[in-house]
Length: 98
Image (cartoon, rainbow, N blue to C red; front, side, top):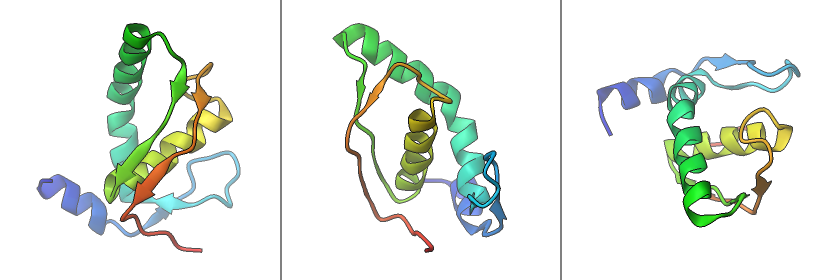
């Protein structure tokens, strides 16, 4: 999208931001995610109020897919958007190391 997005994508160092230190994520994507998270929470809460639902389906492409996976993990753990029902998610174009 922009130069900062590309720089985040090129930051290939991993970080272990979760209590289970064996879970490592791409540091650039995690930085991007934590930057976006306050707005994501605000937009999801506003949509929930408008449409009267607490069901959450997450989708994303490329870095959005990586952010989607981090968000789904945080929602499933109850760290963000508690009280929401996490529906199946759709991602494509992200890179995953196994």
